[in-house]
Length: 546
Image (cartoon, rainbow, N blue to C red):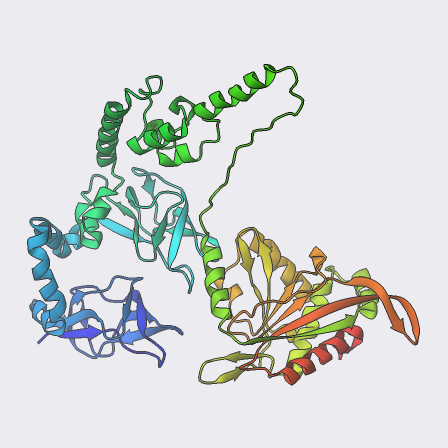
């Protein structure tokens, strides 16, 4: 008798799993103990072994798709056995929903249901939006490297996708002809959503689209025949509705919505450059048009005529135009917003200390006379933090909900500003690295962060974070905790101010450090003791060598 295979609960915190890879396909013989698939949990990617002998009759979850624990992912039984009874017995509710949906959809359900059985025979492969980071929920198509009809290889980069952390390449891993493109450049698609189809030239991909998204994706399809038909219909409608309103641009190819917006704004479509196929003007082209509208241009001449009429006019008049630009929120900015919003649930407190940097300034100058890589003040602070954290493990900790994790290793995250927001690469085992190693690593991180070349593992695993705004001349600031770390250090600029030494007022170099602490993990006395040790390290840099 056929038995269903369900998504296992592989960790105590697991609520769903991602089917990373199938090791068997429908029709393969399976023995107890065979690895059926690789499943990505919230902690690791693990092998999932079969507990039954038989034939894999059904696969219910595609690779890369997440499903909740206990959801059906497959069926194992005897070769040729009808597995539908096992599916119906396990999930009667979906079966009832399908029966209710049949009268509403009329003839479409029959057309949609058939491909579910036959899609494996279609010589085409669906390319989905991959999960390129652990926090990614959607990706924006930054650029398509191919167009519909192009030949592609299995190792070709189909598109550049902007995630919440970086812009990365998406490789199709399939050779053939690019038959379909879903989201256009600048549009977002959810993780696991269809973004393209690659297969044999001339293949009918309608069943693949209907099988995974109903009739809506078909309407948004990019096959040349359907797009041409849609364009022709829109052009005919546009010509019929706009001949009376704009005789001089009535023959310009444009969508009805683009014509309406152009009419409202007084824009002549002859002045607008179309970005769609064949130079056709669409809504985005009109909205992005920077030229002066006809009505504004004509009205602006009126004040000039009225101003020249009276001879006594002495006050010049200026007529401005109110303008603004709305830019879509990037994936990086969305993640920053979400994570920092979560951070405000943490009970913060702040401790600030002033450090005499005279000896650090002198020591840095001597180091850079012989160091192969120029050492910055930020490198000195990072090294001093790493040594201090080993002496104060309570600060090098994380709130885990039901427990507090005291990290024995020191991984320090360094906040790096980029155009789109903020990235935090991690200097691992910083306490065991020299100043030269730290300096070279941080410089490499900064260069690759600005070029969007950082890899995800390089931005994970920090146990403490440093945010330095000293290079911007900031006197003092506070930073928001970067979970799950319990503390973050805000480093300000070095200021030359009068200080009292040995009873005399002399010029000195001082720097303020502010430690932001998670009060669930670190108390005020603990944070203050850490800052006192850090202050001693920086005021006498020779301590860093001990």
